[in-house]
Length: 237
Image (tube, rainbow, N blue to C red; front, side, top):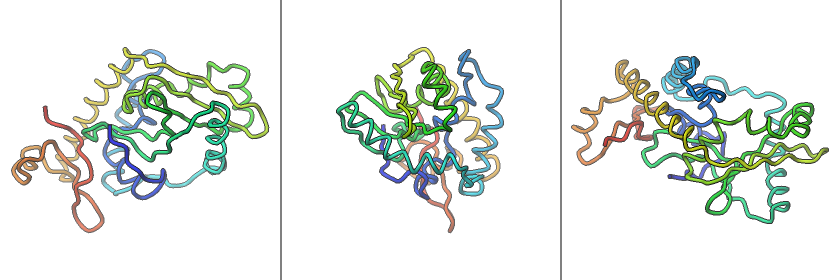
């Protein structure tokens, strides 16, 4: 696991995400209810390719609730720390050692835990308040992705509204689902990598080896001026 210390939403954070599947998109690779391959995978691949091609996110617009969520997130984390008697480590972006997949936890707790904060619309928060199990179900793949990438044993997901009681649900690792995620993301990364190589956005594995003796894997080569080593998409075995 590699923790990248950057602000979520910053240029550095966007750069680190380019060309790799991330936990927020895992539900488009594996369906949350069945654990089977999702029909949305090709659309997600096209999106990742396009973002890599233009060097940034396709849509930087934000909604009222997204802005509100960012404003209230720190308040929600402070509440969680007080309520649970713990310290939360804020992190920007986390990847596996090969930088082939990533996630953006709202925090890491101790050696075993993770934290995801949601600040939904009031009526959505009420639905989680009345039926807490629907909260982790709505973000099942994202949470299991965070558990997998960060090597954690549990993950607390919090729905926060300053005018109502908070909802906290702890989620444990689902090893069977994590195995399916690992297989799906590996296949996705290979297909995305092949497409980027085909259209000249990346060097092939052999070209990378020839030009960088001792460096393993296929790496991104993209920035505004020309090329820069950003992250490994596939680590050679």
